[in-house]
Length: 467
Image (tube, rainbow, N blue to C red; front, side):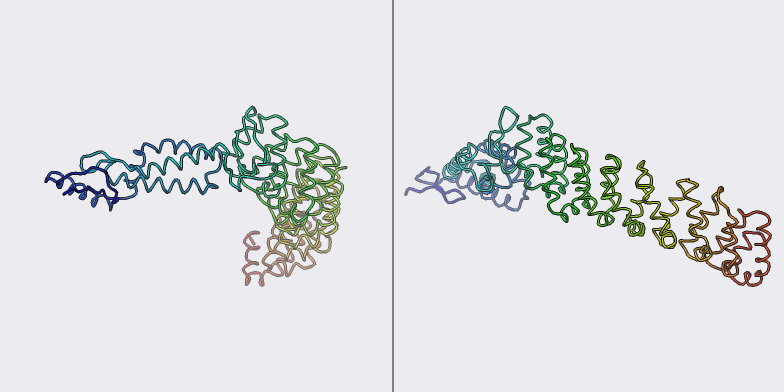
């Protein structure tokens, strides 16, 4: 009776025998035993078998081509192919590399399907069937010309390629080496998503490489887009990545009109910039790069909001940097506002640093005006945690009249000797005042010595003075 041998996938191999001899039965049992031993193996064994499939070489080449085209994540057909190939390789690996029962055999139906799918992918690479995701304006978001190093395929939006590390480096190289036509193609694709690209950690690097290559008209176009929405502009400046993009744009401005437009937009967001430690660098670059005549609006806004900025954590740092610039117009305008609000700033946890920085500028005229401005309030300031630091700063300056400050302190000396903060001011005053004034101060200390010995802050004064 004629019988047919059946493989593990229930497909006939076409070899018919009249009788199954014992040797064939033994080989079939050994094959089944190998199958049962292979099933529990891990995926690493399957990965080993993956490279034994002869047809896989062409598919791997196709996959590398699609990686170059940045279509690997956008191609469901390729994903299905990869899944089918993996299943096929597992089947072939399970069957011992295509040899069952000592007789070589293959899977003609699966090989036919695999070759047909590969043919479909070849047609796809030749642009016979481009998916919807890779189509866009102007028939494909810029066809890259081969004589400029571009690939002859529609790869989707260039702005999408800028978001991936490898393709972003390629774009930067093409920008550095490309012609004006190349710059125009990339710019036309970037401008519609300029907000997103400026804040993207990878794409922003491509954009910062592109902007120095742009023409004056293209820079104006960027300014038009980012200043159209003031809130969006502020958001870019506050963003840690976006602020670097804006700084690059400032270095690429060509005309006074462009500078005035950007500086005007920065001026409108000054108070919002204090929320970010990075946004202050945008303001500082405006003063370091542009003359005072072009920064007039920014100077006035900073002066009008000087107090609000000085009492802010980041704003006080920005004001100190502004006072350290070479822009004399800005410095004089800010110092005038600081003198007018000196008393309120001295008792603030951040504002006192601004007042101390003005003293550290070592301008005798400004310091003397500041000391006179605070006269009559030194005892009050000495009892304040932050104001006491300012008073001590004044007492350590040699070119001012210390007697004026010490006489002002003597009006409330009994309280200051046992005050948690005032006692430090008295200790400093003792070492800087003249002998006649020191004798007067010693008389008040002797009178309050019994009370000072009962107070821990008073004892600090006595121990410091060895009394």
